[in-house]
Each structure stands twice: as structure tokens, then as C-alpha cells.
Amino acid sequence: MTVKNLSLSLLLCLSTVMNAQEMGFEEYNPKSTLVVDENPTPSAKFTFIDVHSHQFRMAEQNLGDLIKDMDQLNLGIMVNLSGGSGEGLQAMLKNVNANYPNRFAIFANVDFNGVGNDGWGAKAAEQLQRDVAAGAKGLKIYKSLGLRNKDVNGERIAIDDPRLDPVWAKCGELNIPVLIHAADPKSFWDPINAENERWLELKTRPRRKRTATDPAPWQQIIDEQHRMFKKHPNTKFINAHMGWYANNLDRLSELLDEMPNMYVGIGAIIAELGRQPRRAKAFFIKYQDRILFGKDSWQPAEFPTYFRVLETADEYFPYYKKYHAFWAMYGLDLPDEVLKKVYYKNALKLIPGLDASLFEQ
Image (cartoon, rainbow, N blue to C red):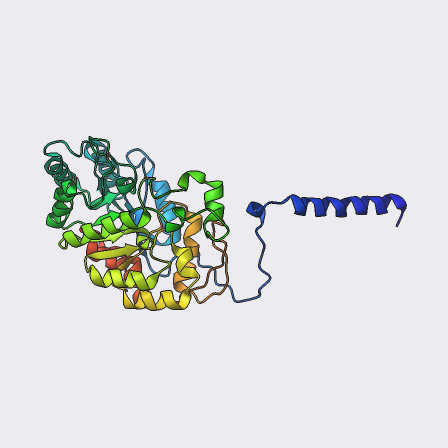
């Protein structure tokens, strides 16, 4: 080797070392060297219903583009939780009914502005009844209730605020489900330190950090939700994100036993299930009639990770969002009958008016 080539080699080595030293933890993303069976699952084994999706432009968007992606995933019915109310909802329904009436279901939303004014609850319930008569299949409650929504006096509206009771009671009367997202992962309330599993997420997305006074303790918000569920036993509630108890399935089991009108969706918590495959499989088998498939954000490329966790016995495969989870996934290898219930049977029972002919019976 010439002196010139030796110098270049030394420079390259030095550059590699320096780059490695300068690399922050945020960039560290090692590839596994483990050699195991791999069974990528680009589409679901059974046609499924996604009970947790958001399409804010459904009134004017080309639904044919959505259908192409849905067909590739084997997604039979998409539930759009962002239907709004009144004229906006009706515009979405018009587009759906004119093009693909059996492939989409739309949930209405409640406007919490004005809570505290005389008659707010009755008026909100009446509007919801009109939205259901127009074609809405359920009610979606965003996490802003309990976190950001305030009444006319500027006070935080608790989820179990009695002024909201007419809305929950109306859902029971109309036999429509309420899909509700309360709070966020408890780690968002915990100190940002070396022991916080969501440290990277909070470091890169600091606006997600919460405290006991911003706006209230995590447990307080969760308890408000549970009290409301118990107060309205005739209304069926789908607790989004497994109620943020996917990391504590023993406690979630207790809650399901306490509240027979509570169901759970698996949107955005597949990483919790994929790191405890034996416990999660036992949970799914025991509560197979109470769990529904939901993804949350509409990113078609992310769905195969859900299918792979639910359907296969694969070991140690990556999750699609490093900041959400730095650990690897394992498959639950669920029995077919359990898969069918999670994928579509439970949703068909809960959400009125869906086209059952799209699914294997």
C-alpha cells in the first residue's frame, strides 16, 4: 500500500470513529443479527373492520384511492371517526353513499363549546339524534374531553361531568357505540428521565408532556372515564387504545370484569402487545368478545405489523416507529376464531347497519 493510500485509509477510519462518537441516541437504530423464521403479513388473513380511522376530507376526497389501499390490506369497512356534525357530516355521507356505501361507516362528534349554558345537554343530544338519523353509526369522543375542553366558566370539563349525561344516555337509547379516547399514555405524566420508556418520544415531541396540573393527574382523568361508563350501563363504550392499560393486562382484565359495557380497541398499542405474546394471547382468548381491531392513523404501510403480531408466531421483528417503542415484536399466533372476532365479528355486533355480507360467516 502506498503512503497516499495508507493516509486515505486512516482518514476514513478516523471519520467513521468521529461520526459514531457524534451520533446521538436518537439516531441509534441497530439491525438485529438474529436469524429466525420470518412471515411478513402484507394483508390480513380475514377481511377486517378498522373501527379507528380518521379521514377529515371525506366530503370531497376521491374514495376510489382509499378503496385501492383498503383492498390490498383486506380491509372491508373503514370507520371514519371524524365525521363532525350537521352539514359537514351530511356532506361526508353524501360522498360515501354515492360511491361506496357499504365500505365506510361514519361516526359523529359532539361540540363541547357551551357546556354550562342552560339546556346544553338536551340540545347536544338532539343534534346527535339528527346526525344518527342522517346516517352516523356511532359517536367518537376525542381526548380533548378531559384534557382541553372547558366550560363557559373556563373550567376543565371532567369526563364524568353530569352536564354531559344526556349525550351518553342518548347513545344508549339509539343503540350506537361511543368510541372514546381519554388521556394519553401514563408515561407522558411521568418524569422525563432514564427510566421513562417514552423518553425519546417526549424528547423529540415535548408538547406531549403532561403534569398533575397540566391539566390534571393521569389517574384522575382515567377514573372519570370509568365512573362515566358505570353510570351509563345501557350505553356501549369502545375504550380506544385499550384505555392505556395494554401494559397492565391484569388491571385491564379487572376493569373489563367490572364494566360489561366496556370494549377495547387496539389502535396505537400493538407495541405493548407484541412484547408480551404469551400474556397477551391469553388475554385475547379470554376477552375475545370484547376486543376490536383499530389502527388510528391511516398509514397503510404500518398495518402489516398489526397483522404479523396478531396472526403469526414470529419472533423479534421490528416495530415501525422507533420513538414509540425501542423493543422488538413477537407474534401472538391467535386462533382463527379469535382473529375473526377481533377483525370483524365484534364490530358487526356493536356498530349498527354494517354490511355483514363482506365477511366470512
